[in-house]
Image (tube, rainbow, N blue to C red; front, side, top):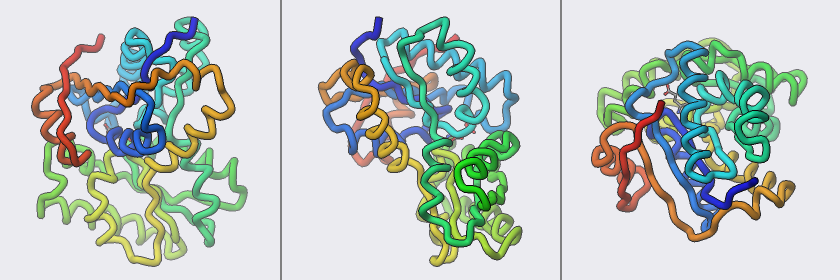
Length: 275
Ligand code: DGL
């Protein structure tokens, strides 16, 4: 039976907050349960099996806490675990519930944004190596191609609290320059990791103004609104008290302090354990 409960939002750490923020804006009455696996972040350099195991643990935990719907607000987990969870696990553990990712809606959106058809992608090593964006974009927009580079230091910079530091500038410029050197026709860059909007101002400053920078939060939110229009049973199962509960697998106070800065309001968090 479909329980009544919050929308689960999962990420390896803080990155999913960039998606949550837009989801809260789009669905102000809905309840949310955010889970950041900060103790085991980053996921971007981990194997397929490890990311799948961790993500499935998180999805099960969110299901145990009555979420009828889980948004995997992490590209790495969407690339490496979503399909297996949807096709292999969901039919056994909770056939009536849904798990959605962030890659498909983002790939859909770039069709409107790029004129040259050459789309840059910055993501974690795992997302880039999976080729998920190349596959989705080519499927949805024939003639488009994706030029991808990994930015392996960006997630650790965010997770360790250095997003506003001067040192971060060097790492931002290094990855942006490496990507742009690959193809002069890139006119749109997907920030294909939900942590990257936490570095947005630095990235925007490093990317020429003529190039579109695509953050995923509002795209995922618009796609969810559309999904809920088409799936009234899931929509009806979302509890509506306008509350969000923040959970982390690491230190709750440290999480709350950093999340409050990003969300621009005071939040409290609690520590949970996944296995
Ligand atoms: N926010 C995750 C993503 O979108 C970061 C992954 C990581 O932990 O490396 O890919």
